[in-house]
Image 1 (cartoon, rainbow, N blue to C red):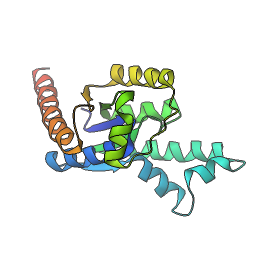
Image 2 (cartoon, rainbow, N blue to C red):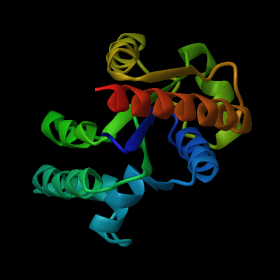
Image 3 (tube, rainbow, N blue to C red):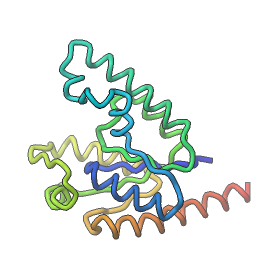
Image 4 (cartoon, rainbow, N blue to C red):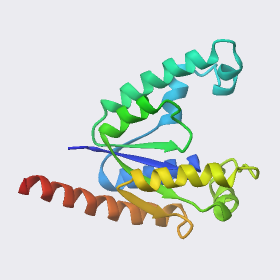
Length: 178
């Protein structure tokens, strides 16, 4: 049984804050993929500095592989990830093997509003086409999709706590019947 949830969304602070609320409510652990990246890189190295170095892409691939392997070993955890955290598809697949995906969906017209509430970076130049492709992928991949245009952080956390609890009950019931 997949014992983790992978919370994915375009606004990392929003995803992390909601993930922490749900983890506390469900007595689970929570971790941010971005924090794991930073831990692997060391505090002195930023992702931007890494990518601008001559062998940055190779180092990033190595770090990403280590992070994916760590997460694949987690149990009873909520892993928080922004839409563009994982670049290599094989690393993402490792994480998905142990995780039920929860997509915190935010329509483009709400990016700026939610960004101001959570302190997330807002890129006014985000391509609608790029976003809609990623949005479609995560809607199709997810077990639970929450329209976060309707919810501030606390209400989203409360709603997802309920949805995740119901999902786990159904999953357990299905396994018992099998």
